[in-house]
Image (cartoon, rainbow, N blue to C red; front, side, top):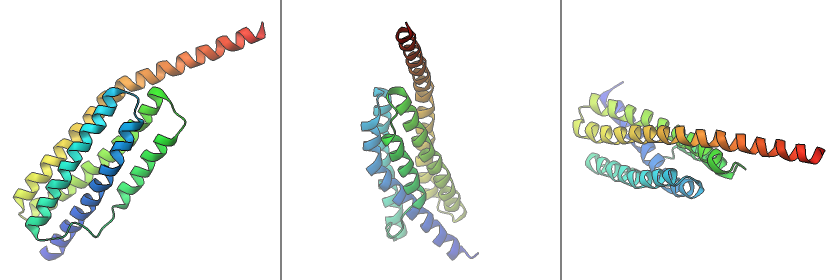
Length: 180
């Protein structure tokens, strides 16, 4: 593979990331609206603002490269966002809904972590140290978001489990009363 081919791959990876981030900018407000936990709503809103910054960083890289960021649709992110939409539309309620949303969001974060890691590695090999540094900054933010979602999930999953237990107990009591 020539360096020209590698540079073309780098630009292609960046276009994929650009499309992914733009799709995410549209999806995050829906996830925030569907969340029940204030902490989760805030995390989605905070990540929306971060994601807008990620788009700006990618715009700067494209400008420096003299390339157009458009022209590619990230099919991976499209599928992940579809899964997030499915989580929103499920009949889950309360903390169980939040647990489903967190799962969908973390799949997105892991995809982005992989994609930014790949783009950063290509930038390094191509000697694009400024771009590698910019991509690493975004990569670090994606990892922080994933860690934040993990921390929120610990509380949400406990609440979801408690809600389920309370619901089972109420159903059991209701059955007992109807038998009498």
